[in-house]
Length: 343
Image (cartoon, rainbow, N blue to C red; front, side, top):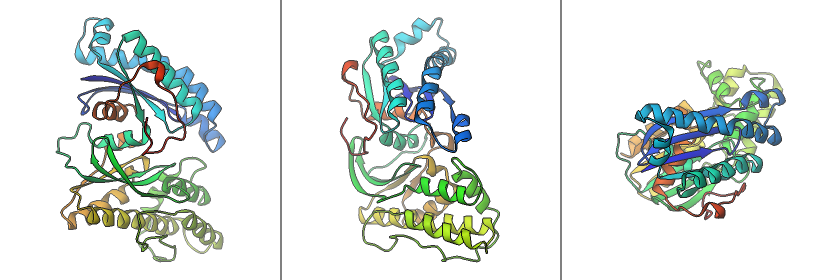
């Protein structure tokens, strides 16, 4: 089954073609990140305008790459080979989502193919299934970590999820970005730079100085606002090098994420732990999760780095495994969609 996926939930405009949910044929991503770096954050109106500018060229380029990859004689042959169109309907910025959904509706009508709405959060999970030669055994505990979400989910099967817990305030990615700004590393999306700065620290001389929020509570919820505030106070003391603070912050955040996830994996006797979302690209998180999961004999699955951030590849994959095609006229955006919400 060939699915053409479209993703426009935030500041990336993406299209991809995926076969049977697991084989990426081609992918195109355009980003308006540089515009938001100037303002220190995403301006929804700017993001939506850039989506309008990018969407048609991105779709066209993706079809052309697909034609070359499959050695079709014409684009018409490409069009006929597509079995369905998939699109992110939420969560995300409403203006950006509308651009992608309306484009997907038009494409579905033009191709005379079914349209499959996809929950962006569920989509993150399927970055683990694409181009993966290992068998992913279920049930699995999934940790979704990004700038807007921190959730623990029990994945019993495709389309069968149980919500275990999530952040009560800030998402872990948001905490990373805000502490990076406090450290003067970046005004926008500085989490990766914070991790890079932490690597410069040879010894964490303030280990334990920052709190590990809710780490010992008997639940699967998270809270990162207190960790962010405590980091701010330490930075304001101007007593410690930036790399030491960065390392202590990262160790605190990762310790909480890993311990909660491992506790859930042990409780539900799962065979696999999966990561998803932008923060799943974090090397320290990947290493610590694998180390602790290996002790229990549990497989750890993480997406390739490029499939951690927003893209249409995992949207097409999620559509294949959770195929609920509907008439294009019935697909609507839902910017506040939760991971357990029905489409």
